[in-house]
Length: 179
Image 1 (tube, rainbow, N blue to C red):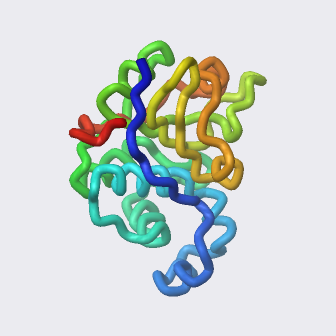
Image 2 (cartoon, one colour; image 1 turned 90 degrees about the vertical axis):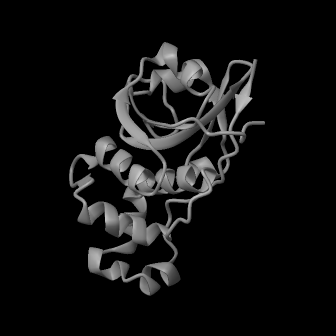
């Protein structure tokens, strides 16, 4: 049985106009932050899926930095992202989720999980955050805010698991929004 949650796509690339309008220059280089914004872009997708008023990506990045949810050299802290989601009205929890439990977790809600960008099968795990939004015939369906993710939205589940770190951000059930 397949289950797919309607999750809008957001990019982690921050447009220059938005960066300037939202005062992103206070954080430093726009392109550098665009390469680091996967966590906040994924969070933005979740907030939109739950129907929440959602600020622009630059504002979310600034909020995450202010709340110390981003650590240079480490990246986005799952617990920090879960706290921000909860503050925006979407109850969330950072937790380990075994690979064999991912599909069951997706029956009620999408989740953010840590994989390696482009889902390589070479043993690298984690470092990039994407939204898992469902599964269908052995494939994991996802929204990836990276450039590569703009053209890819499904991978074989075994490939996704090969780069999955075992850590995820889970959310309260998404009522009435499955297809």
